Image: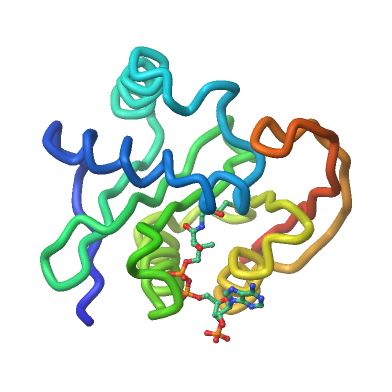
Amino acid sequence: MEVVLRAVHDSDLPVFFRQTNDPEALRMAAFGPADPADRDAFEARWKRIRSSADVARTVLADGDVVGSAAVYGEPGEREVTYWVDRAYWGRGVATAALRGLLAEVPERPLHARAAADNQGSLRVLEKCGFRITARARGFANARGEEIDEAVLVLNG
Ligand SMILES: CC(C)(COP(=O)(O)OP(=O)(O)OC[C@H]1O[C@@H](n2cnc3c(N)ncnc32)[C@H](O)[C@@H]1OP(=O)(O)O)[C@@H](O)C(=O)NCCC(=O)NCCS
């Protein structure tokens, strides 16, 4: 599968909305928005991301829109995030997408956070050179409770 990143097009947003409302994915990511099915809040979030200095990319696998990957936040605190359509999990898409994003964004350090039990995401981050530097607790909307979170960093 050829994984490519490109700028986000308006026509990608309905696809992202569907992908980020998958119940299994939401539970896995844990720290999602309070109401992922709120379309207005979703549109507002993406408008903000696309109009700010954030780097947001659509992930294509063999030409299909299979997810998104982004760097966001204040300088020195910049974080990576990504989401892959459940139909494509376990085929190296997130790893290739994150590698592509890291090649596009040279600044270091970069940060990441993941639910401590999100083994897939932690593995993707580890394969791309991130290391766990701290643990935190946070309220996970998708779980309805406070859970452990891993805090990671990628140094230059
Ligand atoms: C996490 C996510 C991005 C992974 O995407 P993906 O395309 O399946 O990832 P990859 O195929 O590149 O790599 C996944 C790695 O995790 C491993 N993995 C996946 N699920 C796992 C699990 N439950 N336990 C242990 N390892 C697991 C895979 O074996 C693979 O490692 P390997 O290459 O050493 O075999 C995807 O599941 C997703 O979008 N989840 C919902 C949103 C989310 O959690 N985003 C991240 C928020 S921090």
